[in-house]
Amino acid sequence: RYETAEISDIIFSRCLDRKKGRLVDNSIHLSNIHHIRRAKHFIYIESQYFMGSSFMWSEGRSVKCGNMIAAEITFKICEKIAASEPFAVYILLPMWMEGITETGPIQEMLYYQRVTIEAMYKQVEEALMTKMANSSDYGLKVTDYLNFYCLGTRETSSGSQATGTPTTDDEILLSKTRRHQIYVHSKFMIVDDDVALIGTANINQRSMDGCRDSEIMMASWQPEHLATEKSIAKGDVHGFRLHSWATITGEMNEVFRNPSSRECVNTMNEIANRNWQKYLAKEATDMKSNLLPFPLEYDGGIKPREGLSKGYFPDTKGSVLGKQSFLLPDIFLT
Image (tube, rainbow, N blue to C red):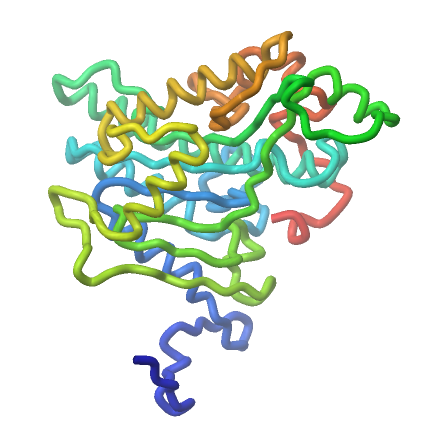
């Protein structure tokens, strides 16, 4: 049964904020924060961009990219570390944003994304160091709790669906390496398999600000299938997340049913690392599994992932670290 609400039944002011005298709808930002704070076991995110919480950055804190998503995720992880409770965050992004990697705007967006990721890793590392210094726990790593991924594929000439003869330099190069990223354009967050937030909003300031890009988001859950302190939910959201993971990994592994476990985290990382070796190998193979580790790794600081020549994305001249270009105001790029 469906009913249409009267306009008088909707209380708009409950999700409005005030900025410079104007009422602003930032309910998507607030909804994401609400569900991150109530997370008990894990968070899974797919987003085209991931930047925010500039007050945590090691540099560029004056940039107006203050949405709280990165900070809230980080604080949730630190809370779980202090409580000795299993918790995992999986974040899937494009290898790079759409565009030519070495151009100024793309490099600057990569820079803002990199300092966001680095700030999160540093906070989690500090929480782990404190935990290990005050307990019998040892050997804990940031990647036990927080991991970033991307998607890529390779195909042999026999498995290719390409048509025509390559003519440009890029086409000729790609016809030799036969690899490319699979672009992530989805925008959703799943928390504990009991709620899925799906819509048009990326995790950046433009989408979360409330008075810049126009966005829409839907929250989906089943009241009879909710997470408890001991278990994730096992309803349709659970099935949707398992299907998503089977699609990107190429397998349906039983450990995926317990995403907060160290075993599941290790399995996802092992799959990604195996695929990374295939993606970078000199000889092309048909990849049936597409999950890759994000091309940044953390070892006390952010650096290009091992195997990347000159720290560039494969087959490009663009640095994975990004850099500020000052060609455009940061309000356009965050």
